[in-house]
Length: 516
Figure (tube, one colour):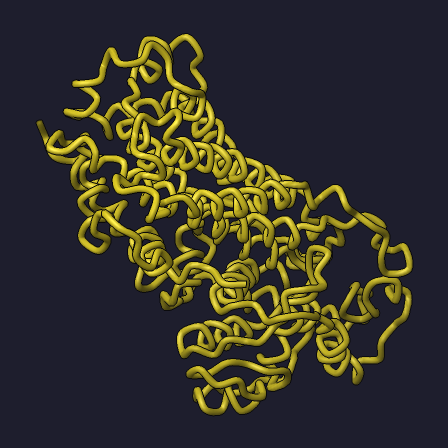
């Protein structure tokens, strides 16, 4: 599965500690930003661990430390077996299948693991997070398969193995044993301390890390979808009456109002719209209802942002520990259940599907000479040339995939671990579906943008709006207009690259920031 390589540029180093961490910071780490650790958080971890070591000495029963895990929680461990049990947990749980994850989600998962452990509630040593931050900063990427997680345990186990010199990892483009990768990177391999196997795998880190990447890309793409939709409106001689602020106040959903406002800005000063203002009384829904559909997606994104932000800054380990009256108090519980995030990511995939289908409808409309009032398939010399006939086919196929990916994953819970874990979140599946859907949406919008840019050729010398004109110009910097057939796929990739590297977004933002 291939995904965009774009990485946020706002952060070159992200400091993780007890202060709030943003989705954008997790995405930045996934894209290659360095990690720094807050000294106060390191000190808090050490304090809790000292109390944990005392509890072990005093024979206090602690799940996953002095006992087995899962349905083996009743089995007591001898002190000399505790370190080996931590490594054994990783060895046995590293049971993923399939093709490996690409580096960004592995890095995102590691970032969420470090963030949670720094809260000082898991009882692990500061050395554990220091080793993990060195791995991120020096480019050691644990190898982990994509398949097998019902919400936790799989990717984190494969990551954990590398920390302790086991498993496999990528280093400078080469897949090596975990020990060799760590050695080449100059990172000391530590032996697992108390809880340092179990704590790595018992949280919602996989859902949160992959979900953060899905959200981050989707949020950027909804903004690009506004641009594509506005360009299509101009090319199709539409009108912007449906975006009127007075109309939006009568149905004040926040996302709808925000989208309509953005569309008005994108289309401001459009000579194309001005000429055709009275051309059509009412447009098709894929043009007229952009505020309602993109706005609904924005409202879904707002919900998803809230959930993911809470999750990034939460402790989802089991058990966790607090210190009261200088005594360690273990708190076994269910914070590792991924239901809140899984539900939000299912909603995200549904929102992406709606934006995808609406974009595909506009691409089809642009190329349909029977209704577009443009040359058939956007090619003046038709017949010998197919023009833009086939890209909307591709958009239809990919939008169909996104409708399939919108089927909720979280409802497919099953009973596992000898019925001890008899309701699981399937949150990793939800996160993977949302991430794949976001990547698909970028392809669908690529097709609409290249079609809309070609459609605008038939309105020259009239200029598009401030925002749409900036997007058009950015596209034309690398993709010229068509007057006969030539290879399509390189130009589709060129426009996709403009989305991924932020060129179109920056051009539009600069144009809209100009005071007029």
